[in-house]
Amino acid sequence: MEENNFSKSIFIKSIILTVLVTAVVASMVTMIVMNNNESSSLLDRISTKLASIEQIVNKDYLGEIDENKIFDETMKGYVDGLDDEYSQYFTKEELEEYKTDNIEGQFVGIGVYIVQDTEKNAIRVLAPIKGSPAETAGILAGDYIIQVDGVPYTGEQITEATNKMKGQEGTTVKIQVLRGEETLDFEVERKNVRVNPIESIVYDNNIGYIKISSFDQGCSKEFTTKLQELKNQNIESLIIDLRNNGGGIVDEATAIADLFTDKGSTLLITKDKDGNEDITYAESDKAIDVPIIVLTNENTASASEILAGALKDNNVAKIVGTTTFGKGVIQELLTMKDGTGLKLTTNEYYTPNRSKINKVGIEPDENVELSDEYKNVITVPQDQDTQLNKAIELLKE
Image (tube, rainbow, N blue to C red):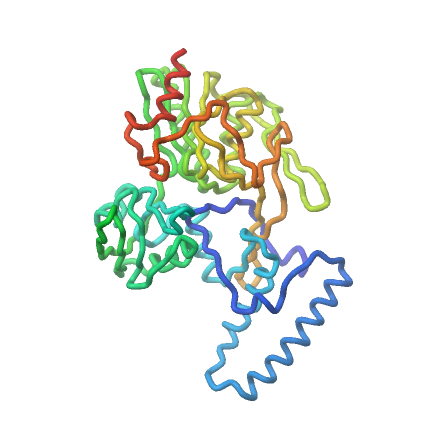
């Protein structure tokens, strides 16, 4: 398909809210790397096979045939055949929902941050979003979601559970959670939930603190506003909290990195499949020059790793916490003329010092663990937040 059939925007997937679709026909179209001639051969094989299947289905299939669904599932199957967890085909409706959820930072649902607990193969609630229906209903950090509308879900089915919790505004959904050894049932009304990506506070009179929950559209502008508010309070140092931040829009992350690095500094290096490099440089002078510590954990991913890596490699920040997630690939979101979309992994990124991130992560300068009780929780009481307290201690030295 020609280039001008698409409009492009760069982004990195959010771990929690991303909609992954398992295609019915994936086995038909396993994709391998090939040249143009081989691609044509593959398309010929697909066309021939589909024609044969269609002939049999039209002749013998007992049920009704939904041609639009068959078409969409075929497209999904082609992309699913890439065997890439981040690439995805979207119907028109799915694309609009994806943009709302992952770029604009709002969605209709119950409003919880969730994560897959791989040890228990369960869905753990990191925290309800402040002011969300989930918080109002009484769902707590540390709860395990075990059923949605009577359907049981495991940790491996976190995407399906997420989709089930979404729906039309004003409708209700039944959520069953496991809290300790007690099973609790909640009926939660779905509402439009807006994620507030930036929160700030001042510790000990002169230590600024900014938490970034996700890199949504406009995040860097809001960050700049919060930073100016902290500067007006005469902060002498800064903590940037990227824990449990699954990523978002690349440009938002580099725009924030630009605030703390010298003009012309390397912020990000990306490489395509042919090894062609694209380097992002800082375009502005520093907005502030104070000691900085970045907090990370195992859920710090993608755009968060770009920011953490840029600040660390430019020697403007130290990292405290645990090794990051290790999502070092970038997807391109392509919108087709018919309104459908394709999210495709197109580049791998590296830190300014050319350190590999994908499946490796960024190691902290100071490795500090949270207690088991708070490892998978977003809101940690300050007296129990060993990572935050270590950062404050270091900044006081």
